Amino acid sequence: MERKSRQKIEIRNILSQNNFHPTIEEIHIILKKRIPGVGIATVYRNVDKMVRNGEIIRLEVPGQGARFDGNTEKHYHFRCEKCASVEDVWLDLDMEGYINSAPPLKDALINDYVIEFTGVCQQCRHSI
Ligand SMILES: [Zn+2]
Ligand SMILES: [Zn+2]
Image (spheres, rainbow, N blue to C red):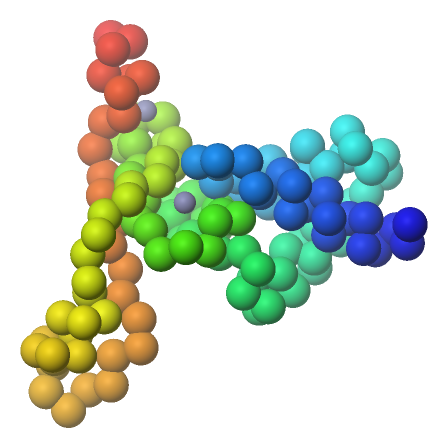
């Protein structure tokens, strides 16, 4: 198989893990075990392309930079303030419907919104 497409397939595999939101560095560490010698610049390039193609999602995590998510279904995230882990939150919120039916800003065109939950995760709560 061509090296380039193999990298993309492996990155997709890594990100298809449920409830997993690695940073570029974490993706690189896992990928290196599967494709020895792969550089982080290549990972950046592939991941960036996949984000632009809508295959994966880029999460902006305050103070941590970006994390990536292979699950492109609409969902939200919880971030632990202690260990910085990120977890999926599934909510049946019809925000698009709400924005369309009762625009919160007059005359502004809203393209996107961000909802982030923060707090202390289960593990941190029980490891005191
Ligand atoms: Zn935690
Ligand atoms: Zn997620």
